[in-house]
Structures are given as C-alpha cells and as structure tokens.
Length: 254
Image (cartoon, rainbow, N blue to C red; front, side, top):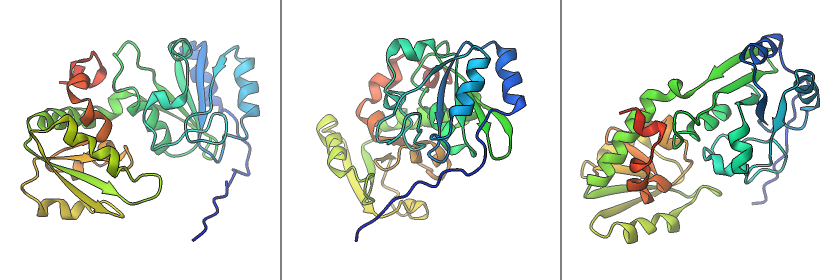
C-alpha cells in the first residue's frame, strides 16, 4: 500500500512570548541551539528576528532523517543526530525549542545523558500555541536515568536477555539486534517480534533477566516504569561497559 505523508504547518504566528524573551535576557544567553517540531520549523523567521534583536547567536542544523533545517525528531535522542560540529555544540548556552508538548524537547534532554554535568545545557521550550515558557533540564528525568543505569548494570550481569523487535517501517532493527550475540557470546538472547510492544505481556516471560529495546529509543526511557526487569536501548547494550565507565550525568546519578 502506498503511503503519502504531508506536513501540517501551524497556521498561527510563531514567535517568542514575552516570558521567553525575559528569561533569555535574565540568563544572558549568548548562543542558542534553535530547533522545532515539523509544524513550526518552516515558520521561524520571526523567532530569528527576535533573537537577533536580543543579540543572540543562532546555531542550528538539519538533523538526520529530517527534511527541513531546524526540524527535531522526538524519537532521535542522540545529540550526534543533530549534525552539529563539536565547536558548535560547545558554543551553545542552551537549546531553544519552538513547539508544544514535551515529547520533542525531552529528546534534547535525553540526548545529553552521556555528557558530563558541565556540558549539559537546559532546554528552553517556547510554546507558540499557548504563548508559554517551560524549562526542561536533567533534573526532570533523574528518576528515569537512575533506573536506566540500574538496567545497564543488570544487563551486564544477566544470563538471559529478551530483545524486543518491532516490524514497523523505520523502526525494525532485527539484524542490528543480532550483533548482541556476537558481542556477548556467553549470554542467551530471546527475540520477541511484533508490530507493537505489548507491555502487559512482558511478565509472561519470567526467565528473562532484562530487556533490550531495538524499537524507538524513547521506549527505553519514557516507558522505563513499565519494565519490571528493566530495559536499555540497543546502542547502549552494545556499548554497556563503555557507557558505565565514562564520565557522564548518567553515572553521576548513582
């Protein structure tokens, strides 16, 4: 079946609300990383003008798997996906997200879990629909990061691992999931393949010590509470020892 995807741009005015302007002034931010969800990323001219008037430098990019500059995907919680140079990323004082809801901007928070606390930047969320300001930071996900670190430790010690695979286009990662067997030949891996992840069915497999998610990486964080045995994402499973050894926010929250 052929599928046609169409953008649904926001019809209203996209601009910084007075509260956001006052906050940026008060914090004396010099450089912001500007991103937006697809409904707003093509209408950022007014925002750019406002930032220029505040003498704030804009850093942005066209992230992986997007078709527009400054477009942010909520499922992609890896800062490398932003395609920013190292100097550009370090120059950013905060990330400025234009859009409504928390799903997309939280990707920028999760994406910084492998950075040290000195490198982490807060996310200033400007909602052009409700004309409001929200600040998102690492402290908003502390409990989830602690559970995630615990799941990483559990994975290293586990003998029997359940690997969750979805057949959804764009999320199916069965073959990359097979790399786990090469990396950890002493562990036994069980692959569970379905169109969706049925959280209510997980307890039917008590022999599984811990789960590895190969679908949307946000499942490994947002749905952490639904996994009694714990869950980690595929990339972190393939690099578990390295993730736990590096200096990062994830390891500072023991």
